[in-house]
Structures are given as C-alpha cells and as structure tokens.
Length: 553
Ligand code: N01
Image (cartoon, rainbow, N blue to C red; front, side):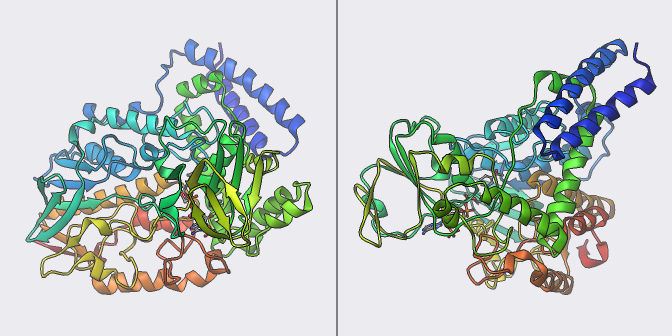
C-alpha cells in the first residue's frame, strides 16, 4: 500500500515530469518522461483506490446546494449572454446565495463563442488546464489545446452542475436596456420585457463578425460565409477552397481542411508570427488519475497560469527579455520552412506579439502541401467564379471562407443601453469604449461588465479573466446586500484616473509597435488591459476599492 508520504512523492514526481516534458525540445527525453508518467499514473490510481479516494473531480467542494448560503435581501439580477462570462456569473451567484437571476441568451444554447464557432479545427489556443474555472476543474481534457466541442461540453456540465438552465431564457435578443430609480428595464426583439435591479452585460467581444468590404462579395456563385458561420454539416472535401485572412481562426481551419480539399488558397494581407505549439493528446489513464487528484489539476492550472502571466503577459507589456524568448521561438519556427520564397512571404515586418500571437505546430506544414497556395497579391474583387487579384489573375474557387475577424470594440453597444437622464452608452463611449477597472461605468448605476472594456489581458485565459471579474462583482453585490444600498456606480474621477492609468501604460505595450490588429480600435486607441496580468489579478482580487464607488440608499 502506498502511504501518505509516498503518495506525495509520486504526485511531485508526476508533476515534475510533466513540467519537464512540456519544456523540453528533445523528443527522446520527452518520450522517456512520458513513460515515467504512465508508470506513476498507474501507481497513483492504485493508491487512490486503496486509500478509498473517490473519483471526485474537484467539483465536490462546490456543491453549493449542500452548503449553507447566506440569506440575501431581494436583488434581481439580469445577465446578458450565456457564454463563458454569463455562465461564470451565474455559477458564482449560485454559490453566493443570489438565486434571483436570469440569463438572457439570443441563441438556442449556451456556450457563446464555443456554441457559434463550428469551423473545422476550432479549438482553444490557450492550454486547457488554464482555460478552466478554478471552481470547476476538469481532469478530463483530452488535449493540451482542447477542441471547441469539448469546451462547449465543459460549459454545458457547468450549467448543469449549477442548475443554470432553469435561469436561462434562450431566444432572447436584447434590444434596449434603460435604468431608472433602481430598476433596469430590458426589452427583447421577441417582445418580452424583464426588470432587474442589477444589469450585467456579458456579451464578450468576439461575437460580431466583420465581413470584408470587398467588391463583388454578393456575386460569388459558390458557397461564401464567415468563419464563425461555418455550418457543422458543411463538407469542403474535394472542393477548391479560398480563405481570406490568416488570423487564429484561419490558421486552425487551414491546418484542419488541407488534407481533404482539392485545393486551398490562403489570401494573406499581412504575415503573422506563429509560435510552435504541439497539441499533445492526453491518455485516458492520465485523465482517470487526475480525476482522483484534483490537487494535481490545480497544479497544472497554476503552472500554465504562471507560464502565460510571467512569460507571455510580461512580454507584451514591456519585458524585453521575455519578448526575445518568444521572438526566438517564432523565428526558429519560421526558419524551419525550406522554400525561401514561401519563408519570405511569411515573414512579418513588425515585432512578435504586436498582433495576437498565433499558436500552431501544423499551419506551416499545411501551407507547404502541394495542394495549398499562399496568395499575397492583393485582392481586387470577388467574381462569380472566384477571386480576381489586382494583377488581373483569377483564382477560381468553389468555396470562399471569410476568416476576417470580429468587431472587437463593439462590446455590448447593440444592447442600446441608457441611464436615467437619457445618457446612452454609445454617447459615453463616443471617444472609445471605457469602464472603471473593467467592471463599472460612471453614470450607469448597477451595471457591471463581464468581458467588457479593459478586461482582455493579452492572450490570457478568458475563463480566468471572467472568474476574477465575477468574484469582484459579487463583492460589490455583497456590499449592497450588507448596507441595503439600492444603487452603486463608480465615481467619475476614479474612472477618469483609471482610464488615464491604462492609457499611460499603452506606450510600453508591444501592441503599438507598428502593426494593425484587433487590439486597436478604428482610431488606433486601445481599450484592453495595458498593464501586466499580475496587475489585473491584483486589482480584481484585492478590490473593489469601495471608496471609488458611490453607494446610494
Ligand atoms: O480574426 P483576426 P480571427 N482583406 O482579426 C484579414 C480569437 N480566436 O477570427 O492582418 C484581406 O485575428 C486580416 O488581415 P490583416 C482570438 O482572440 C481564438 O482569426 O488585418 N484580409 C487577418 O488576417 C483571435 O485573435 C481562438 O491584414 C482581411 C484576418 O482577416 C480572435 O478570435 C481561435 C480583410 C482576421 O484575423 C480573432 O481571430 C480563433 C480584407 N478586407 C479565434 N479584412 C482560440 O483558439 C480582414 N482581413 C482561443
């Protein structure tokens, strides 16, 4: 029987082997470490069974229905969006004892981005153990970067665990939200009206597709659609496919479909840096072992969080040494391309990470297949039979995929939000989207954003950002609950100081080092978090600073 001390030693050995395996570039060493891990997994499973551990998966501590939850004064809460942010909010409201909430979701299912994006190869390019909520661990991720369907399943399990579906109104497209005297009145296109004391837009920023303004788009005779509108049953096999754009969505699609299409043309306007990221499969043995030891899943979360925060996060906010490590890895990846002409086409003319970094170990391989062409000549127009280039040549196509991104600065503008006195959110944001510490907005009482302006932290895990924000909001609600306040909103001078702080840090970021990206708005402004991830976490965890909020009885 494996005693307590041996158990800890085996856990430590397993995690050390895991971290060493992730960091090594020596495939023989990696194989050796993997073998050692398999042995430890078998021993740890045997030990768990002997010790009578149940295959609880880290969710046991969050059986909110078994816990004594504080009684709350009546406070009705309306959340817009059943994606990552809205579901996290619902889950934590449950745990905190705020049961009077509704989640308004325009589509017919939960998942947000992970419900809508069904293109082939859709996956998360943030490591799965980090792309998880700490209060809802998942030992069962099947890959280092889980496919979209698996992430949707995880969110679905979360919705079931927290009995959120009974609070969700599907098919509710919010069209206007007005605040007056402690009450938000929310109307939907379907003709319903909801009233709530607290209003939480959790609509995210990757939900409004951008269709490129290329002449002739409506005249294409074949299938043409945005990457986020790829029908699950659409099969590109044997077809001549063109794809406009080479961002994260395109890279995943290209890697996935190149083997099955007749021919693939990637229309690239600007080259992208690509960081090599092998997508390891995780064995069933490993998943089973982790299901007995939630503490190990947490160690993995912590490892990846440190990697993304200290390595990645600091690299985008001015740490030159950290940035060089990423630059070297991306350059080595680029250097692996044999054909000098192709390599030249793929070489960006701006610093690494200026645009959101692409993570892929399969994209460059796909581009080097004989049935794939990288087209860098500019597009003149779309014609019924294909794409006409400015030099007069025609690329004939059956299918044209517009992987042309999203209007990332729209946020929740389409909800038509207004406050007493008539001020609208669109007026408040006419010089750019803003918020106080990513959460509140001066002039708009009882409104808390999840995933709004200043909440995006580089390539970090959206789940982690949402979790931190949601818990921050709950502390504001607790203060309302404790004091009996009917209204809360940030002081305008606190918001101005915060926006100045964020804007003051922009110059240190790599995002303004000479490229165009979705981080910048139409005027070149930035409304994402511009300091380190650690600073965001600190602000979310230690706050809210109640002195910066106005509470009204
Ligand atoms: O969109 P993008 P995306 N003519 O904006 C090109 C998240 N995401 O959907 O660079 C020609 O990155 C444009 O060219 P250029 C992630 O946050 C996450 O790929 O502007 N080209 C660019 O190449 C990601 O960053 C995952 O010159 C035109 C592309 O279209 C975000 O979503 C997976 C054009 C747009 O790239 C958006 O990624 C996928 C035109 N008129 C996405 N207009 C995860 O794994 C645009 N382009 C978590």
